[in-house]
Structure formats: C-alpha cells, structure tokens
Length: 439
Image (cartoon, rainbow, N blue to C red; front, top):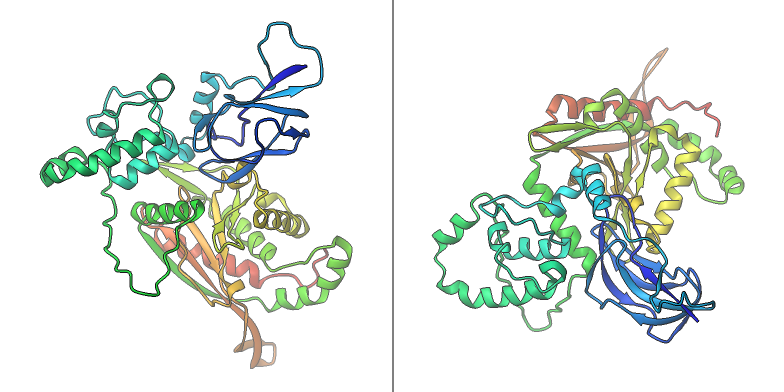
C-alpha cells in the first residue's frame, strides 16, 4: 500500500491559510475521491475540502482550530498501489512556496491589508506573520502591534497561535487592573480604539444566544466600515413600469426555456454596470492617501441565508453580460450561497455592491459599505403609485410602478455630486428600458 499526503488546497486568490473547523472523517475511515473530508474557514467563507484520492484516512496531521497555510500537509491517505520505497508519503499537491505567498499579498493589497497589517506603534522589527484569527482576537481585546510583538508563540517558527492569544488575554486580564489608563493610551495611540463594551443585564426568561462565526465576522466588518468610511446616503425614486410590464410578459416563457425564474435583480445589476461605465470614479478603493481605480466591474449581490446571516457573492465583469447571462449567474450564485457551496474566489474582488431590501418588503434603506469598496446601492420594493405622466395630448394621472434607490457612499472620496449623479443615472437606465427587448 502507498500513502499520499493531502495538503491544504488553494481556496482563492489572496487566501494563504485557513482554520480547521471540523473533521468530517476520522482516522481509519474509508474515503472516496472528491468526498468531503473536513470543513475549513477562511476570512471570506466556510467551505468543505474534498479528498484528493480514494483510500483510507490513515492519519490526521492537524487539529480542529489549527490555522494551516496553503500547501501545508493536513492528512495522510493510504491508497492502492506500490510504495515509493522510502517510507515517506507522496505529496499530492506541491506546497505553496514562500515566494508564492508574497506574490498573493502583493497582487491584492487592498483585500489583504486588513489581514496582514497592523498600525506600526513602536512594534518595528516584528516580522512575524499573524493569522486572521490571531489579529481578530488582538483587535477585539485592544492589543496593539507593539504588545502583540511581546507575546511568545508556541507555533512553528515562533508563530502566535489561538491558544497563545487566549492564554495571554487571560493573564492580561488579571494584570490589567494594575495598569494605568495613560499607559494604555500611549501604547496604542495610533491604533483604532476598541468599541466600548456595554454592560447588559439578563432577566428571568431571557435567552442567551451565542453568535456563530459568520455573525461575528459580519458584526466586526460592519463596525469597521462605519469607523473607516464617513457614510452619506442619497435617494432617488425610479419609475420601473416598463421593466415590470416586460417581465410580466416574458417570465413564464423564460422559465420554460431556461428552467429558472427571471427576477428583477438582473435589471438592477445591468443598470448599475452601465452607470459605473459612465462614472468610473465610483468603482474605486482607498489605500491610505491613494485611490485605486478598478479596471473590472465586479458587482456583489447581497444574499440572505436561511440562518439569517448575509453573504455577498460577486458577479465578475458584470458589464460584459446580457440580461440572460446576468440572470443565470445570479440564480447560480444565490442558490449555491444558500447551501454553503460557494468558493472563496466567488466572494472576493467585488468593486461595487447591490442589496435588494425590497425583497423583504422594505421601500428603502441606508446600507453599509463593503470595505474596501466606496459605495453600495439598496433597491427598495416596487409599489404602484399615482403619478403625473406627460403625453402628447397633455399631462395625465396614471398608475405607475415605482421604487426607491438608496445610494450610500464614502464621503472621503465620493462627494454628493458624484454620489447623487450616479444613482440618478442608474434610475435613468431603469426608466429607459426598451419594451421591445428580446431575451
């Protein structure tokens, strides 16, 4: 019998490590090729990792909760075949070299900066890599970079692990009563102050519900976005009567032909992609005092999950797809999002986001920006309203289908003029929809 070393797979651009959540198989279990063996969490998504070979799971090399680099061995599989004669397992996938990790970080600085960088508050000289989990704990506990550099790591090459952090936090909590407030402020003067913890009383009959991992991640990112970006929201009401009438006419035939529904979301994405082409300075990110103008138009679509959480899969190059292509892509991403089958790549590289609050019956909202983007659009419920309509024979009152568009943007780089013109242009494209469109 031969053995094969299963390694942590590459799970998307800029993803260089993952946290082992759960082993779905135990040592000694028979496994089929491509059968899910474990669940791994990255900073973008939880995903199942399939077996690279069929055989027997001989040895599990990493424990649940461990943070493992891409390319590092995680298990040994015993397979049919001749041994290589050395006694050493054959690696199924070549480990990712150090140079590759550096290339990943350099290729997407705006996406990885929140993971691998910390404010430099006299912690110079500390070149250790810190995992997203460790940085998350440090941020939650208000541990500065200089303080983080003093923690002794028990991991490989002195790396700080989750257990190191938890032990330090426990010890720090005991000693913190003896630390003066001025000293704490001086040690973290350049770091963002942690959010104050509000004391909450629990009464008889109250239920305490532990946040799951995704809810904690959402909470942290929403608070971060509000701290980073001064939010401004502009509102426009759009007349989408043409879209409603046309969709009502073709939706049954579309479903028979393609086997899936035609929703309103593709119309919104198409209008947004066209407006971004007209106003490319909405399609940007901020990196310190630099503005990164994005070449690709990658539109994220917020999807509500059965758990009540929210996830944002990304439609890459949305401006290059027609209505049918957008509809198929949206239905595919939303369907797989609800059963946790998205890859990390499908959640990354978004340059603008659309959230359909109208699906919950809301007429408008004030959405929070997805960092490092600078704007997000919420589309409200479509409702019938009496409106003044201009005709060749004069103005008349008619029933029209209307909806509100709510555009939140980062006032550091998007002023009211640009933010307002952009959402007005989206409305213009929606209102100008051609009733003779073929699909």
